[in-house]
Image (tube, rainbow, N blue to C red; front, top):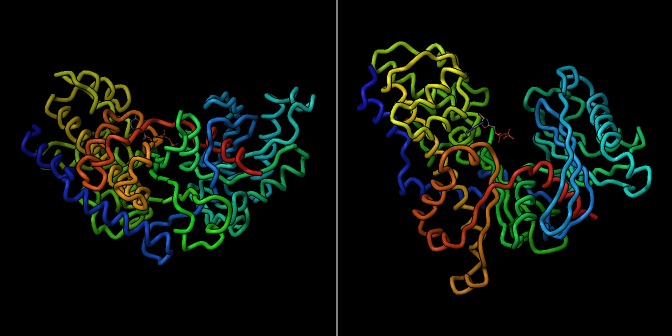
Length: 460
Ligand code: ADP
């Protein structure tokens, strides 16, 4: 039988106190600086060449293409001004053959899907010349070195793609060539990172767009993009030149503190890292994002089973068998018998009736793991807010206005009180506590659609 003392002890290992939170923020700030200076020690801090944030008044029809995994999404966004928009979209699969074929085949496939989409949704407007050339924002979620708003060199493939001849090439050009080959009236206007899209989408729908400073994703992975003073981007001379005082920087904070100087590192985190094929990297992400929390729960639950001399649940015996959605269901079940959780386990995992002690263990662990994720997220958010507000002296805070944050991703959206835990944690960080009444936060959906269209709209 599960013993409460063991369950509480294991759950207690996921607690993160205020002192740890502050150390994380300090380290986050120094890794941000190191990345901006490119001294090889910090986060990637990639300049995005996005310097025009939306005002909410943008209008017109734009295309967005999102290639990020097994699906390709093509959509058109009609920006109506006043923070409003409408959207059409179509999702198609990307076969193994395309993922491992030739460069030409993959990008030709994308171009053909754009043609099908235009035929389905915009044939009349194009025939009547109501639409002439359509600008396209290309969300390409693979590592690229961005050279300008619509130029990016593919560094390597991830997520099962392997087309060696594409590495080292400009992915916008590869797409534009195939678009031109079939004479589509489409210009690849911007290469977009999805986190930057989140920032843009939140800005657009915010009644006071100038207050949005950060877009943050807590979904499969985690990442954040924020507005930086252009002059601070010492690592990239090209980014320092250009119009306007600011540029959006993609932090790639999933790779924060890979050396584990300040991050918590329980036996369960260590076991999880061993099960990944990129052991030692993305250490922040492995404690925060949806791809990993289900697995941490599984490992911790099995550790309790072992200590309480119970057999491992069949459904929990294989690595990666638990989805993070389970954490949300468990943490939000407030009933005394945890009926909802039991039903979910039965329906999704074919688990028979569990003793209440075991159900309670899943709930306690889920809450602890999800709360730790939100507190770690708060450390990253605090780091960005401190960095953003640092040029302002205390007396100037009146002119600073609100600090608005756009969130996206299933964890932020569905894990109970995720945003509440973030807010609570921000108050424990002295440099941010004084700002907490100005911080506004909310879900900004669809960065890779609306956000990408907005970035395309701000290009000339
Ligand atoms: P993506 O980041 O891939 O665009 P999502 O934001 O939906 O998409 O994130 C997917 C991740 O969120 C997956 O790792 C999944 O396990 C997790 N997830 C899905 N549903 C929930 C939920 N209800 N609560 C918490 N996490 C969830």
